[in-house]
Length: 276
Image 1 (spheres, rainbow, N blue to C red):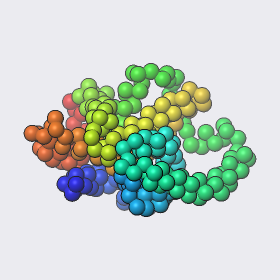
Image 2: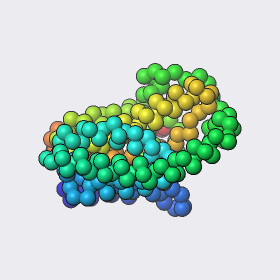
Image 3: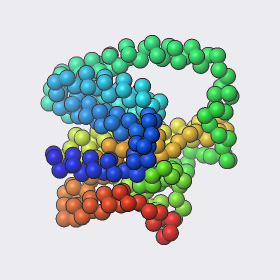
């Protein structure tokens, strides 16, 4: 509805990370738009809207051409594509849209992918990793402790602007974990298809990004370059989860004040948690 769109638009527009990267001509400034297009295309497929396949292809192609981290979201969309058919009022039209969208995407991606693979053949893996990934500070294990620390930092990253340093205070860490795990869980059980798709997209991409970075560090001894700016594609999905969760039935009495507080916190973030 319009109020949902207004709240989400305000949240994305006031986000400190986007404000920072919108000042220069980097690809990160375009990431939120690719996230909006991806969510919109998934909703169009689910509801069997006309032109859903073309919209899906456009979202996938633009996002992949803009940021290589977007391929994590592409992998998640590929995994959840069969689920989009379950809630469709016209499964045949939705299936046709998926075939058109993925078909056009694979055709458009074929030539650049072959060229990229050919270029990689002349580069040694150690040289490639040394240029893009710094040596790791120490060994890391794929444990819930480390994963929870990354999730906490991920949740607060949207309120920190350019900073990407994990918080150590209990208050900040707990809030970060709640913002990610709690609202993704609410979205998965929501009756709203948009929130369910956002939960699958945000949850799946986050796990791939964090889990992949841990495995990468274990195999190469180098830290995978993960910063707050790499999450910008997921910003619209998080806005849908947070705003939709606060407008749901469990929060109907205090949802609007909570949304206002979230917007104000987002727009005027200070390191309250480090001082707590």
